Image (cartoon, rainbow, N blue to C red; front, side):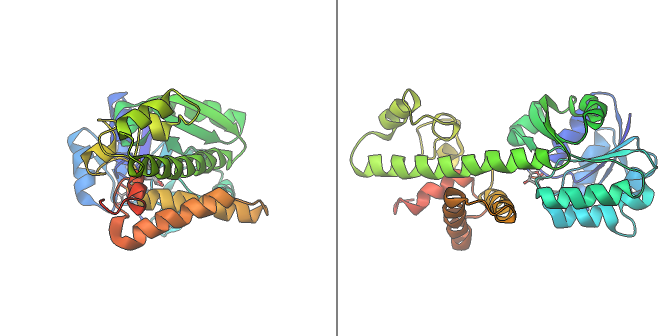
Length: 295
Ligand code: NAD
């Protein structure tokens, strides 16, 4: 297929590479020329604008930081909607709020295009390996249409329901993730302060009822899990500022349906404190630093 791809960052670049590897013809655009060059070296065509990337595409993908960027890429003078042919589907894999998804879907529909939300989990490792989980919001027919394209970049392609429900799944998952990480950090720091070997404590948690992905794969205490960001100075992984963004999406969405989000709001403040002290770029498991003077 001819695919237009806008947003070649930590996630978008490896995703676009996997589309090329699967044999698709990919036209790419990013504000960062170096990112475009890397994809061109791998066989992509450089487009001069989102409009140009969309102009002869049979499917358009976007992978951008936040809703404001998606709005610009879609609606600016040289944006996707200015160039796309009627009937072509736009798939947005950025993590954004469900209300914006509905707004963008209405804008696209007015021009005869479908807009499908398909946020991902699996991180940069999953993006490179082509093993992402896609949470797809749209009609059953739209899901069936985009599934083969997404299958080149992921291994679990899940239809969550109507437009916007992919983002609902994503922000609810990340709400749990932000909360469990803060809980594991609190317990690991307490255990260490009370004198237990953190490796022993981590091992007990992971065979007991305290187990979670935050304890058994991404344990925030340095040295407990050798492959976790905590064991390499909290570099790589999922940035604190991105977790902060996702918890903001969750608490805003909660407000919109008058639903309490007690734990999400508290976790949001913890990651906000991390960001304010200059640690926003560190992996989000660095939240344990709030509990440990030594870190
Ligand atoms: P990133 O900041 O690395 O990449 C974003 C890219 O968008 C950059 O290359 C930037 O130049 C480009 N961009 C911004 N505005 C643009 C515009 N107007 N036109 C063209 N390009 C533009 O972000 P990322 O880590 O790739 O994440 C992308 C999205 O995926 C975010 O919504 C994030 O929350 C989500 N996500 C990230 C991860 C992760 O582990 N990094 C995991 C799951 C989901």
